Length: 266
Image 1 (spheres, helix red, strand yellow):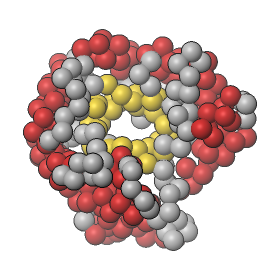
Image 2 (tube, rainbow, N blue to C red; image 1 turned 90 degrees about the vertical axis):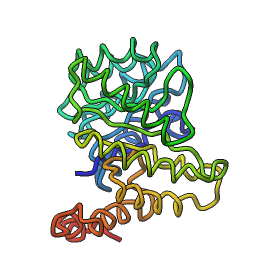
Image 3 (cartoon, helix red, strand yellow; image 1 turned 60 degrees about the horizontal axis):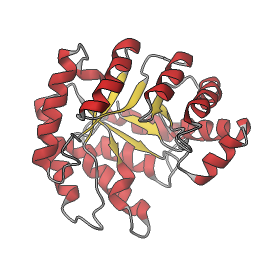
Image 4 (cartoon, rainbow, N blue to C red; image 1 turned 180 degrees about the vertical axis):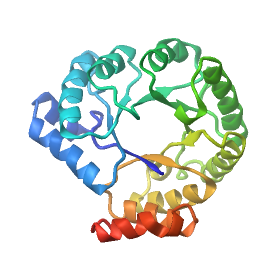
């Protein structure tokens, strides 16, 4: 199964921030419903519109989103207080915290919540030395953080590695580095998930949808089994389902056929 984390409810987006601060419940419910209908398996909640309001905004959003869907939620924040307030309100099977890194301070803040609430966790391949640029450092950081998490009782199947995609507009070899890292991580840790922030690959370029879709297909072939995306984006789910079918990851193409019968393929 491919994990599709719907990214639209993110208060760093101007429209979302405005509607949350208006407490426009109807608008937020509509955003949830659109993503679920498009094929999201999880709904991401990012309440980071204003650090001073993040906790209260997370509480409001969690209440609204959890009533609008039965899908598991992803609590997306660097603020451990905001994450915990969300978890207190809704901690379903499949809930994910987004995110932790190999940075010591981040581990101290986030790991206790993962253990207390039994959630899965998105792991960013970043440590106290910063964000890696090549595949070797990404793999090195991944090995270290998986070892740490397993020592703390977190099973591999609850770990989602985000190898931190960087734009090809400024770093032309980034796609190659990511694909190499994904292949090696999946070879070494077969039960660990890979969940990428896909749209970073196209930052700064026109017609970004073209690049996002192509890279998603390449990632799926490499072993990626999750992404933080907008599932309503034109042809995104078409690409995902088609790539999984062609790569032999969708047995007898049943996911693809089911999506067609349900009118989800365009």
